[in-house]
Image (cartoon, rainbow, N blue to C red):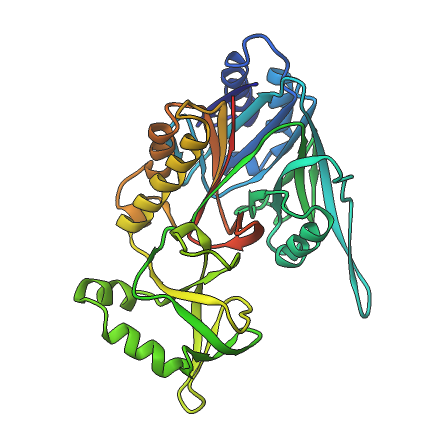
Length: 385
């Protein structure tokens, strides 16, 4: 398998796309691109057809998908604003890739998703939804039913065309709504999800809950137990928690102990002092294990490096063929106080393997075997050599 990436900040959409596409093609060692992803910002959103024309001229990929972005990543750099295009291309060495467009059919009492490909032999899915016309959470649930345990990774498009339409790329065309994606078959995809939050305090068991509302923790009113848990933290942990209260929810229970990646991190979005309940950003069942989490730049850096390190271990310590990365548009320089953090971290931890992606308005990746929509997360699709 060969993967190549290219990045251009040129102002002419077609010329810049050709430059980025040729850079990606050079790494394929003369092979044709079986699949290409294109992430484009700035002037490219005024003439996306020209961008796609340039990529096809440079690469002639069999399959292409992509989207508009507020910023892109590639070549160990992050272009968070302005005009840029990142091109990711792969020759799959016997595997295959099928591009698709999903749209939503809404009736008076039901909703259906059209355009799903045959998922029987799929080994991984990259999904790029439009934020306004596509119910990502609901569709992830449906995908889990059609293809259980198949990793779904991706990100929500973070920019639209200058006309205000969805900027979703499929082949040489624009899709004005829904989601685009690629289903891989015969290609191993190692998912990597870094939620950028560190666990603090003890694990607690939910002893009463309904939907998103936790009524009891460890047999006591949830709000009361939460307050006691925070008061028992050290000073530094209390400062971290004060910046934004997060709760990690174990998705795949039954383990003797839980590591950082076992928790789905969600915000505490409400509390009822009279009832003593907490409302969190995910449904919770009785018996679920939860733990407080805190997010800052240092914990986000450690978490990403640890998550990528585990993928390197899975590959026997060698470098992967490459990676696709979807980083939250709330990360970048605003979170880390420095440019290029996630892009450079991938370059360092994946031994210089080619990687490209974009800053998303929501990131998709699996936790505990099920795929979720996240925030402030870096999700990475790692492709073994």
